[in-house]
Image: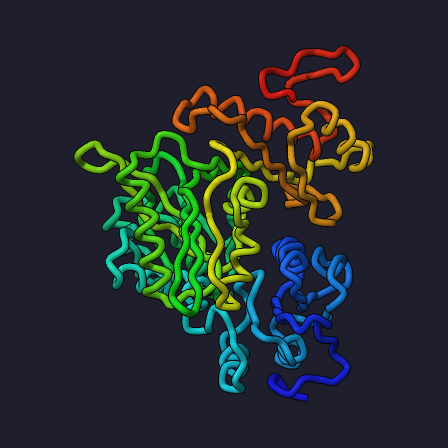
Length: 428
């Protein structure tokens, strides 16, 4: 058996519709599976463990590691296209599949920009995208030089493998920067350094692009990070000037084309204040897959990022990205320091009683501190002004209360479900 001559034991969809192989069995694959079901497709996942989130829900599972060439070949066998729920597959494995005639989307030559931050930075600079000053780090001397150039305001990053705040260091002194660099280089970690940017908030522009070249973009959103993890997403970003909003969307689409990305791509940005006092942006990171900043689209857009990713990698016409509510807030459900005694099922019962309009999405994960175990989407009522900070704050408060309740089994505002305390304008 090889990647283009499938094992006859592998089932095909009886309707003759496509089989999509997704490398990685995490929550992104789990949520993509739901969209594949709706489209009549089969999503095969390469999962490390039978209890991985996607492996729990799809019948077409290959158990193995993403860095095992044989496991990846088995997942790809007979599939119409291979795609990803994370960026960690070694490029050599992907190039082997491509040479065997497998449609890999995004291709290895595009995915490398999400795998290697230094490669990404250089490509973005070449494309004329706004990026912070940066440098590759091959020695402690490189850090000394860059530290002096930036007057001490630097960020150190692992060029490969970091996510959710991992592999990022913000040294407070040159001594600390030198120590971190020496330790990481000695451990074989490829390093880079960037200027530490005095940003005002973080934004994300989510786009999709098909092999045909069709592009689609959702509204630019604000992302709120806590301890290096995305905690809240507000769609659309409140108070973003229309010209900047349009420029960010155009830049994201242009980058997807320049990098030959296919599927969903998230462009994470810093909003900054320019020398003229006007807001601008700098590109921070890229992700070539469905992304946490796009989870709001599951309930808040005509086409979710997961359906769109399938449409894009299969070269279908892309779906509408029009929002279904004036404001949507997504709040991640992160594991509490100690898992509550109350079962998750009971917590969902209580949440439904207080906020029946909150949409819960759980990932089938066990609870442990700071682990992403789900998210909650809250849609605003028609007529809410997305640029009215007070109205948006009210919607966000509901989403964050709901997520905290699911994480901790306690209401952060002290609400007592037995007293019938009022819960504000968004209790429906």
